[in-house]
Every structure is written in structure tokens, then in C-alpha cells.
Length: 245
Image (cartoon, helix red, strand yellow):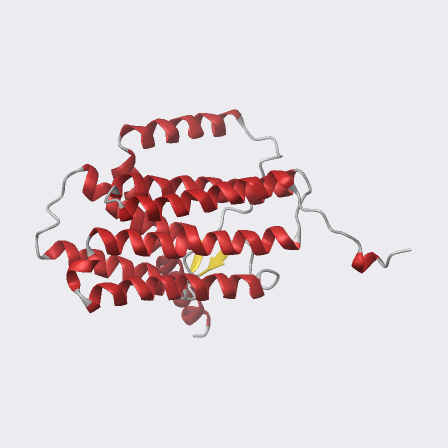
């Protein structure tokens, strides 16, 4: 009889199919950036973000979580939300800044790698209601959202401020991923639980609101989210300081 530890361990198809689709979207974004199709590249990163949000929830709903799935998801995230956004931003505008451009892109990639490594070892330690540092999909949405917004609205990328705005945003996203600022995780929202009717109405309104102008609405929403962690961090620090008096 085989030892349980040496038995063949199968791979769950459904959640890993979503992870593979997210990985493909990230790879597709890189290819499109190389072909100077930056709007398609930015949209692909947002598609990857949606797929990445589904694989974990599908695994929990179908009780198909696995150590393989966790590692595969992390590697997929590194491609879709670490390498792809940095390369898209670099190919679009940062390459005009010379070494400053690729340094900004590398800071982002390094931040994503460090953030994912820290998440993997702290997954059972930190408060599940909050992420420690800006999650990599949100950081990718900041970078890709800026590209999508600029291309869709035909912003003048040859203006002097544009490359440096992209530089600042890219570095901010990279550093925020390795910060200790608490960002709301949304994991307390359970899909398998019944909700009031007005919740469905809010979802419908949110879809309509985003559909009105996706590049602007999504970028603004993720800018707000990207700042929310520091606001919460400051409020916690102030509360602790008052408590010590």
C-alpha cells in the first residue's frame, strides 16, 4: 500500500483554469505592448485582475483549494500584475526617460515580487480583513489604468510632465506594495451568503457607473483605493497616539 504522502495528487481543473486565463491575459498584455497596442494591453491587465479575483473564490466555493493552486496563482500574479504592467508602462512612455524609466519599471517589478513573497509567508498571520501593503492587482490597475486613461482620452504624451507623472505613479505603486499600510481586502464579503435586495441594486448601479466611462471611472476608483491605506494608517497612528496620552 502506498504511503499517503507519496500518492499521486491531482490538480483541480476549475480554479486553475481561471488562473491560467489570468496568466494568458498578462502575457497577452506584454505582447500587445510590444506591438504598440497599449489600450488593448491595459484592458488585458484589467481582464487578468477579474479572472484572478475569481479563481480563489471558485476554489473556496467548490472546496478545491490546494497548495499547487496557491503557488500557481502567485506565479501568475507575478506575470500579470508584476512584469506586465511595468513593461506596458515602459514601452508606452517610460523608455523616453532613459535609465530613470527602466529604474521606475524595475522598482515596480521588485515591489510586486517582494509583496507576493511576503503575502505567501504571512497569509495565516495578518488580519484577513486587510492587506499588508497595496495588493499587486490594485497596483497593476493603477499603472494600467493610467495608460488606458491617457490613450483613450488622447492625452499629450510628448508633454514634459507626462513621462514624469508616469514615473511617479509607477514608483508609488511599487513602493506601496511593500509598505505596511493596511488596505481593505474585501475577503469578509461571502458570495455564498444571502444578501439584502438593495445590495443587488448597488451592484447594478456600480456596473452602470463603470460602463459610463471605464478608463476614467476605474482609474479614479483605484486612485482612491491606492490612497485609502495611507489614510487608514494615519488614522490608526493618530488613535494610538491619543490612547497613550
